[in-house]
Length: 78
Image (cartoon, rainbow, N blue to C red; front, side, top):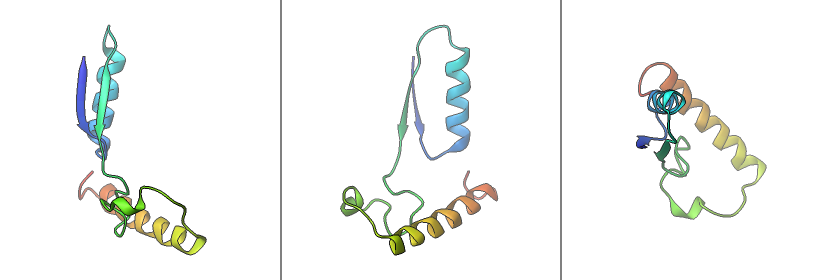
């Protein structure tokens, strides 16, 4: 059995895992994702798929992720 889901959706991910745990045979879960999702200046930009970031940029990434997940947890796109 194979499931294809939005890998950024907590609901879809939870449902897929629950399905897999109940299944009597192996289940493959394909999670479609966007590299850098949740970091406004990185999402979908291939230039961020490699290399390292400095401490200042790491702080910006954490702040961006914090805003992204807060919005999702408020029910605006979980």
